[in-house]
Length: 354
Image 1 (cartoon, helix red, strand yellow):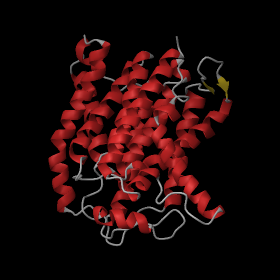
Image 2 (tube, helix red, strand yellow):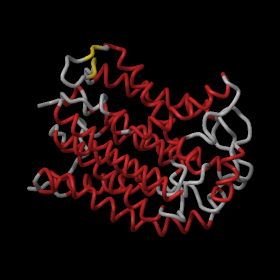
Image 3 (spheres, one colour):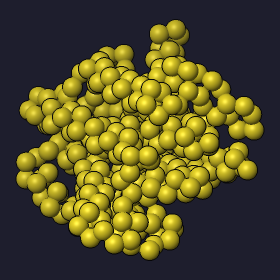
Image 4 (cartoon, one colour):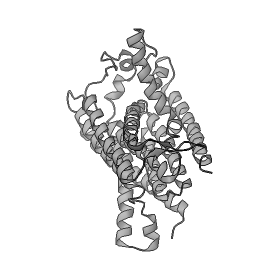
């Protein structure tokens, strides 16, 4: 039999090693089929040409392939099914204790990860076509709404989630309002996927976030969920190994949509179902994701109301690049902040249940 700590850490190690092993083959095919945007440049949120962004990043968009997120969710999926398959074949206590794919804790987050991965992969495949621009934003938002509506409904109707917990206070009763709350959180998290904008940035930030939720789940005795979070961290570390400047590939939608949809469900799993405060600490642990979304929203608001830009470029990490910070400086400071925010969120989550 493995201890709870071993059950949590082994999937992380396996996922990391699988991610490292699969990357050379994935890279070969991504470069063989030229899986990058054929024309560089982006439009701003208001539909105009994003001149500052294009000045800084047009060359990068056509230099390296998209779909590097396959390393993340692919390594997690292989790890999950490998351990579950071995436990099914050899039902000894040791192997079965390692199987973290369980209905009570990980079915929803793991399914969210795979659904997001598939949707994002379709979008990436549309982007890399000659003249392709990907799935229209409104269609992607509609898909996220539909998926999150179903998951939110499942939490409310099937799992009996009717409230969110507040630290050091009584739970906030929501009833069926859990569904729109889950949809809102999912949309915000999906919007934060634009943090995948500088080599190494998104991988480091997401690794801190999922590591924090892994610690929280472990503290709440949700060992299977902690193991899934650890496996995701392992996949992210393997991705980061090849995403340091100059990046071999970019995470793109197949990675960010998978991670953000999974993150929302993990936050809810560590809330009422665990008598914890997983939803409350999400804006703290994911503080940089919040800042990313808010900077986009404020930029649009400023341009419409005051007819000028608040930032040189939105989101905020590109603004720092535009004012002269080198990319590695932005990435390293974001990493430091993401770790600090993760510590703060974990501390609140642990103290709130004592």
